[in-house]
Image 1 (spheres, rainbow, N blue to C red):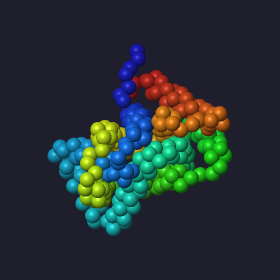
Image 2: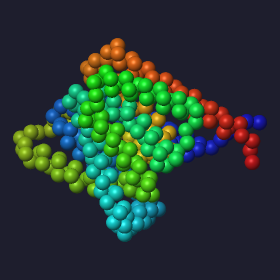
Image 3: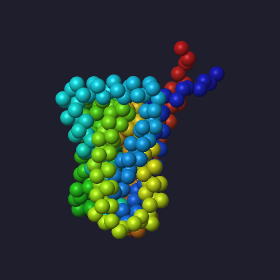
Image 4: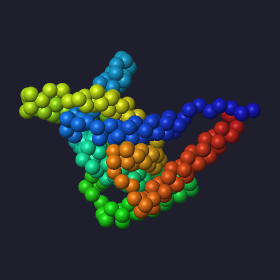
Length: 304
């Protein structure tokens, strides 16, 4: 008799990662239609909405106790304080460049950064955390590597937004995991710290232009910031539930969606780009087969 397996932590991690990628694709599309707002302002509003969402997540007495415990632990350790401050700075840069790219004609650079990011995450997870990859996952890595290499050749190099995304995000997640602070409570602390510069940016932007008024794109900013809050919570949740390598590989869905947003924003996809995106699609298909095989194997295990 067949049995229904519980939704494992890996399953929840995969679902959270996919949802985050879809929402990031939508956010990237909205980022090209925020006339009247600077990239710094949209980043600031994203921070404040993420803070509000995390505050709602931590409203229960149990969540508040867990948060106080984490804060107390970090406050007693200079090493953890430094790591949290470094990661907070990295998070601001990542949030900013994600909004800056689509608004300044660099959406494909952002997409390329997220193409390269999973490979860096796989290397970091394998070297520093001894993550294990199955055969289909290794095949996905190889296929994705061909796509990334093709993109580097076509682009004639790697631009700085690519290096920011692919270079800093792995540092962020690796530091969290290495220090044992890979939790939603720590993310709450980081965003709470970022609320200070976010408020400064918003206040400064309006005091510097007192007659500016409210830009027509204001409703779009509210939608973008709300989706961003949900996306970032799902992203951090996925990073906690999945091995770093698998978390990185699943991130390949995001650049495909960001690429789709860049095309809708008017950027041109050439014939040569097929050498980039076809291997990435193959990598995603291989990951899908890998997940399906593992799921079937789990269901076929005899009950204890």
